[in-house]
Length: 433
Image (cartoon, rainbow, N blue to C red; front, top):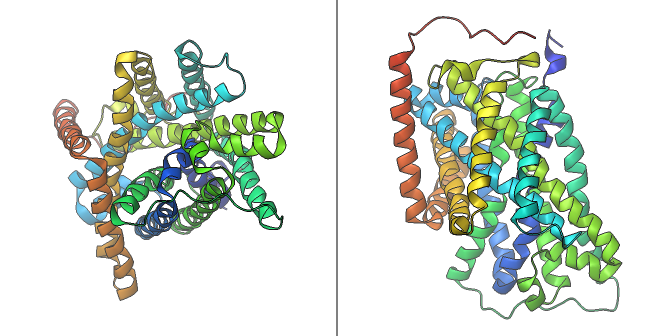
């Protein structure tokens, strides 16, 4: 182990970053949207899981180039401007998503106590979550990594519980609930794929840390592929369990179907614990998102694509300024969502998050294609490319146009920063410890 390796993330922490950022609050509420689709939902999970694994393969292949961040790895294959656009889109997607995760985590607590409802509780609790987890990340990447391992263990419990309940129902004389009587067709499968793919976003965050992963050429690909496969299997089993344990009409109208399944079988007290687990899931994903957002801002600042102050670090080589910048932007989004008039904006931001991350997936797939010579690898990358196009179509024209506008804004900011900052050799100095 080299000098400083004890401060870096190993396979377990990097895998926890993948799993922790993938499992947010969405999977716990997604059965509500999937229940009316019947068997189409199960088919959708299979297709979106395969698409996510193909994209994960592309990013894992790209990560064999080194651990100095996705921007550097894209630059090696597609040039500096493309590398910047990927990092910028990734950064925008992350801090937009942070606001959604914080609000979802605070909202999940409403199952525990009816007083924990409405903006008077949710907005302050969401902001407090961002502030608290930003403080954890400021302590260093291993502090954030330990938090990820702890939250992953907690957030898996409610999902494991519904899978266990499905197994217990299978060996009992009580029949499964019938799926919604909806015919299997392309339109319904397409809807299911769009919904389920959003829940699978997050594996790309393993590519964000800059020089903070031990043996990155081996650790990052293994964490991406292993973590994505694990989450895809858990999601398929847990979501199908809810569909087979709750009547379709009940699941379709429930804001917390996982908690409802547990309450039905084991009572309200256990379900309240599950609701807390759902909140932990959201805040755990928020923790990983804050880490990645800071690393991406830091990576762009190192290349003098963003203001130099964002490349300043603190103890443990922590990019504290970049982390606080991303957290501050997410808090502004949370405050904006506190207005009734901005409710539709919040839904749109979710679509914008997906559209922006597709830029990362597309560039990563193209770059990986240039690295891969085998026919099998190119087949998987071709599947990833087709799936990305399909997902882009599903995100909607408005979100795509806004994403293009944000990419243009990023290029303008980069040009201004390059004009104001003379190019210098060497790495920016860290803040004093």
